[in-house]
Amino acid sequence: MDSDKPIRNLADAKEFYWQMGCNGFHMFREFPERYHEYRELKISSEIEEAWRQELADELYARVMRQRKQDNGGVVLFYLDIVDMTPDNIKKSYKLIKSSYKHISPLYNVVIAEQVSNTGYLFPLNALFSAKTKGLNGLFRKYIKLIQKMLLYACKKDRSLLERAKHIFSPRTDIDEMISFIHDRIQKYQEPKE
Image 1 (cartoon, rainbow, N blue to C red):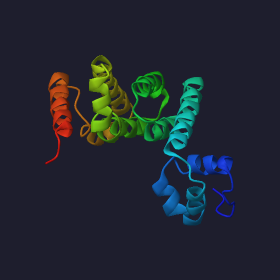
Image 2: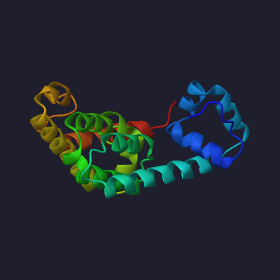
Image 3: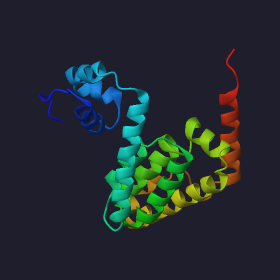
Image 4: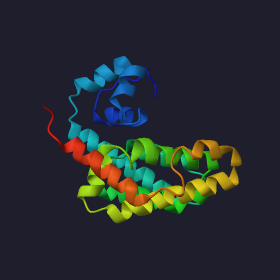
């Protein structure tokens, strides 16, 4: 990002938003003056969401066109910016399934960490979507895909085994995991006193 280039219109704002990973904190931290200009345009959250989805769709299309290339960084960026709608959960599954064998072993482990720990499978917002939108079958397939991806990565690079085993093991009881997650969702839904 050219910190000397002022943000004067929506096109400039969109470019800035994308370059900062669709993240207001990064905009503020890296370029406070540009962030101030961005905020002065009073861009609605609906516009930001549309921009985020547009970027996610572009990244998805790029990886799907170039599946046989190492697009680990692009896949990781996609997972970082995409909102967990049922459609995006399905797309992310397809994206990972079609490309993981062409991604470096380290990126496979990092993507598995993102999906299982901080991205899709464990945060309450993603799980709430998965449980309430009838995506249990996909959720199970996703867990199995991540396990398969980890096995593939560790076969290619044994040094990743220690890191990968902390994500979850191939013997993880999926029913137990889903039950645990369901309990967490129920707890999340309870009104706070």
